[in-house]
Amino acid sequence: MLKGVDPIKLCSGTLTVEHPDDVLLDYLDIRNGYSYPAYDLLQTNGSPALVDGDLLAPVLMGVHIDAGRFALLREMAPALEAVADLPEVSLEDADDDHVMCVAGLFGILDEPRYAGRGVRGTIVSKVLHRKRPDLVPIYDSRIFEAYTAPGVLPRTLDRAWQEFMRLLCTQMRADLRQEDEAFTELQLAAEEAGCPVTKLRILDILVGRAAAGGL
Image (tube, rainbow, N blue to C red):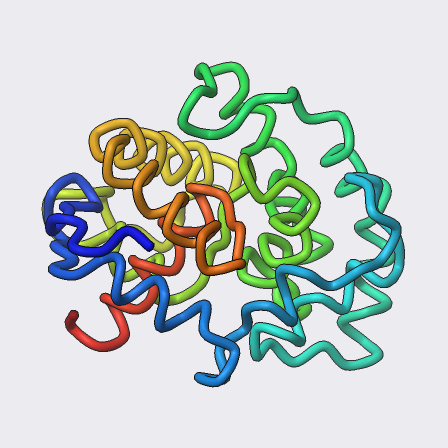
């Protein structure tokens, strides 16, 4: 197993993860009670096509999905089903048009009829990421804090979801490209541990753990 991956800088260089291989493998160890493998390996229909079972996946990442939220996600499903039509490219290789395709999936959250009804970017991203774990990022409060820190994305509360996700995907793409060698080593380490994950999922794990514990 590969060990000793050098420290990496993420979030436009504002966040340093000192021992990224240790952080990653700790998260992937089923004994430690994180969301891998329950979330990542959840079996629904085995394809990018969205089905009802996918709408419950955020529960495995600690998100509460009650009957009302589930019904709302089913109402949104016709728009979210476009995840199956995303281009066959990973985020690190995506161009700006590909990024816009991903961001467009979150445009439904900008519709006034869905304001204040309990389903926002955290839930939608955790529904969609599993369908395209190489291209659609996970979003939550830790990602927000890390990627809107001074020197990264400007922090504002009135930006449209579609635009925010475009900016987030663009910055994440830059991180993946800047630290490409490290992410390749980390992906291999995960595979050797029997826990294959995408580079984008690794990015989410590293940022989330570092933001949570000051790693």
